[in-house]
Image 1: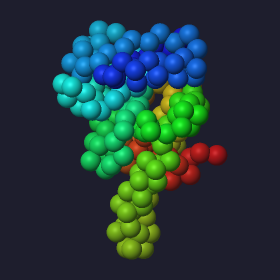
Image 2: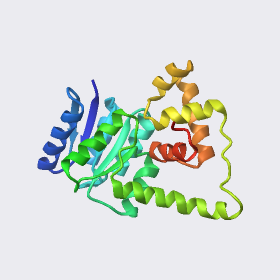
Image 3: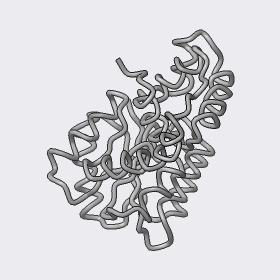
Length: 216
């Protein structure tokens, strides 16, 4: 049974999101919040598998909650659900640790499909957001490409195994069980991988795993 934090200040939108979440995750235990500070408090006292986070709240930005969950609950997946379709909101959220970024102003069926991707280990990204992220990484790679080819990333076989599982959305304890290693050892691997790839979130790691050809 999933435990889910739902951060949204508008009651009607919160009810709409709750309905969608229960369609995708039947039986989920949903904790609702309308303020950043309340959500930060919940992150410090309750455990969540998933957090759906709006960005523009009356008392601040939901990015603060993404950051707090990343620090306190690295296994929790934070997904931004917002109206903001611009780089100024997108990239700070991904850099803070957001696993996905969904735009509210899409057909309900598309949002439901994107939420389903979480269970399949895929970062839920709205199409326009996915294009923007891919364009960002393409632009980032161009200077290196002009100097012959993209620089190789020297991941060990074990690091590649861990990266693939992180990209698929497995938690650190789950990866530890799969590979016969402790959660703390997996956490150390993840730090090394993020440093080598120069990324700071699962969404960025998943894109790098795809670029490196780890998905089969």
